[in-house]
Image 1 (cartoon, rainbow, N blue to C red):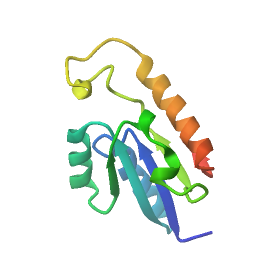
Image 2 (spheres, rainbow, N blue to C red; image 1 turned 180 degrees about the vertical axis):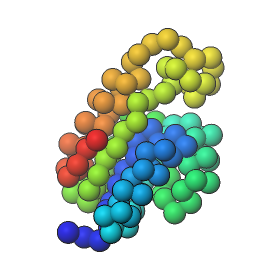
Image 3 (cartoon, rainbow, N blue to C red; image 1 turned 90 degrees about the vertical axis):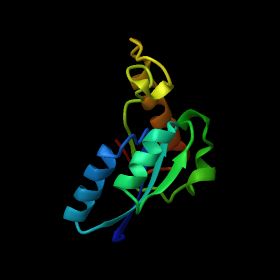
Image 4 (cartoon, rainbow, N blue to C red; image 1 turned 30 degrees about the horizontal axis):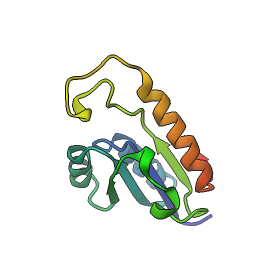
Length: 122
């Protein structure tokens, strides 16, 4: 097993999953190379301040072509938070009431995980 974990955090927000991921890997004796993706500039700017060591993509997850972001077969771990644009101001307006965000995160995470041949998806 490599001492480095290659990870991707979809819908990364301010970096809660990224923090947990980094701490868990550290506890297991691994370093993390992280790609963090979010469509909302404010979230990316916050994530950059919280995780300056990570690589960042300000893009809509559902519009990314995964092999353009990370080499297939190179990702060890993929995490995808529930997409928040339906219940937060991240979409640029007032929060809505739709629950489609969780399903979008699930669909995008599963599809991207398969196309990148990710070892673990969570």
